[in-house]
Length: 436
Ligand code: ATP
Ligand code: MG
Image (cartoon, rainbow, N blue to C red):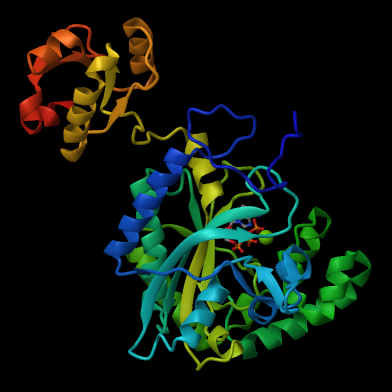
């Protein structure tokens, strides 16, 4: 036998829930339900769907995300195209590609746009629960709006998504908020930060020493536990914010307060990408260990210009799909059932043509029916019907078909009588089978 081929490390198959597996990963039915829920929430808020390529020029991310970030320094899958030497990268996030596309197509010519996309992104990190090398992001962007109205709406939209998914704010997820101010405010803070870290240079690790002058803000984003106390006592950007920045933050908070959404101002939140200013936020959970951030975003008013476009205010967020679905699975919240409405038992192969015609009519009427394929005894077929989770079995036997009928048997209600239904009037009784 040839050697088994395996998936690339850190890149996962998302499988039907009925397939047992070793690692904890979301199952595909949950995944589909999430997509449907997201689609509905975004449509209700006026967001339009779009898709951009998974491969982009490397320079897009170097310029967009920032050179001294974890992503650009060590997490990107980059290569030189064998045909023409172009420097290419598998996208590590979706925002930069969307902004590139908006500039390329002059998409904001007629005014601002609210858009969203969802798909795989790639980061070369150490794989563990909730951290993979290929993972999926829901990416949502409000482009051309200066805020703070749209900032608040965006955050409240995420709350609507949590609620539609059955998550409880405060218990399962909570909101952290900060302002990264404007460039001049950050410059003042940066000077204070450099002075502080220079005074404690002996305590810094290698990454932080390198970033001390290139991008000292990044040191605040360190994952090194040995640096936490030092980072905790560092000068706060919040203390360097001017009145306009404060007013922007206050306006966002006023809406959240009015909407009864609790939040915590976290002055240490800097986010893992360089392009943010003003409002930044994260939704975190305590149920996933150290991979606790399920959604993070913020305002990036400078990114369009940085990527060669006209100055354009914008805000958006990325949501880690696997992390969120792991959270839903972990919490054991009720999910819509993936079971079919009915399971078709076909006793005699000669009944098959008539059975399939009847099943097609049922499906046309919106019923989810799983046909037993591959033959076998009636007993064995009923066992499968039971295991499928269906509420009804449709029994196609020669006698019933001879009378133009099918037998309908309730699988989850022992007291229910067995019924027969006419095959020439499927539409009249199809609804009896539907679960929801
Ligand atoms: P972290 O601090 O956990 O590394 P991040 O700040 O790098 O997260 P973002 O760039 O903001 O993450 O990406 C948005 C979301 O994508 C995160 O909030 C998280 O839910 C998810 N995410 C980030 N990296 C991974 C990964 N390697 N595997 C799975 N999900 C991830
Ligand atoms: Mg990261």
